Image 1 (cartoon, chains in turn red, green):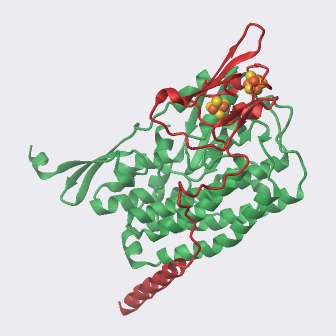
Image 2 (cartoon, chains in turn green, brown):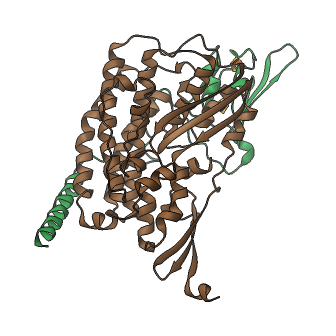
Image 3 (cartoon, helix red, strand yellow):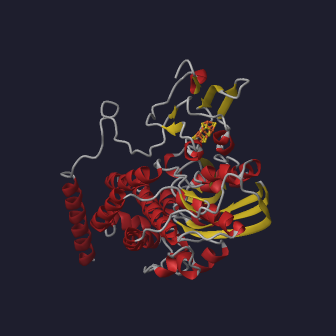
Length: 129
Length: 369
Ligand code: SF4
Ligand code: SF4
């Protein structure tokens, strides 16, 4: 009985000392949004699109699991409008990985929350690039 | 009528913070004692199996990460393995090691999250922060390697997408070096703590017979005295070249499950260490280029692959049917653990419910799919 009480008290003391030790460790949290986290190069955020490189081959559309990409072509087969619907996109990165021309890439912007559904649709055209 | 007056029916969840997702339990109470328990699942059903039927093999690949969002690599591997076997292709050895490395790190991350939240369920808040802090290091490594913290989409048919740069290997090495010290700290705080032991020892006992009858797998089964680990009993990838021990305990109670998972942290670290050594010294390719994932057209056939995930056996069955799968079936460990709850909670006190449930390491997206 006494042995058990002794053991319990000892383990509580060890536990508390361990917690105490951790209080002096380096802080790991950031004061977001003032301080932004450092993201890796491969991070998959909001897309970057280079309309001049795109040949409208449709590969990105084919591999997209969410059907988030719509490509509108003009009569001569040039891309008129390339749009990504962020209401659907799951940021899987398939489009960027399989685009052989490198015209669609994954960017670093992850702050995409909005209260307007229409603004979730991103249109890339010659004019607004 | 008399029964109604004697007992009271209460509802726990689906938004209860301790139900690790959206599990609903309908409990019949007699005072403080649970007389019956009825789990109600399905609040997180996303139709993951059905989704496969309207997508190509490649389009379905990012979705499987979401079955168990704390162990995405396991699901990815199970699905990729099915497709690779249906296509009859080999994957390069280096890619196999990278897959093992990712899965073991994922197991550590998943167990750390379990440990933190389990302790929070029991009312201890410090371990939660320590576990999340250490888990964060793994998530940073995953983000650098795959591009995302939880939904990796990194394995692909025939190998993995990107090579591991040396800096990431360094990061992993330093993590593996630091981690045993951290686990020791958790143990200092938790293992012999009288409050923890009094709430876990002899609570929620799963007997060997029950565990086998209910198809419990993973750490929950090993805590009931059955030393079944699919990494050892039917080794996939390169597990037969790796040295590691599996742990099992005889108690079958919540405390044994805790002990088994803590031991698994150590054994996963050991595996990761061996993988790093191999990957460093190897300059093999990481992808079998003969597979063309976009244009896959698999003739009729069926394959089932299994993987020892962090919450038990995960298996994926793909029945191929040309350009899209005809049917995909997932088996996940948590589903079976939830089935056991009615048996486990009867005649327990309400206060013990969350300790017992938490110790099973159930995660709801895996149950509902
Ligand atoms: S973005 Fe790339 S894959 Fe998509 S249509 Fe343009 S060139 Fe083809
Ligand atoms: S990231 Fe994935 S879901 Fe989003 S547009 Fe690209 S392929 Fe589609």
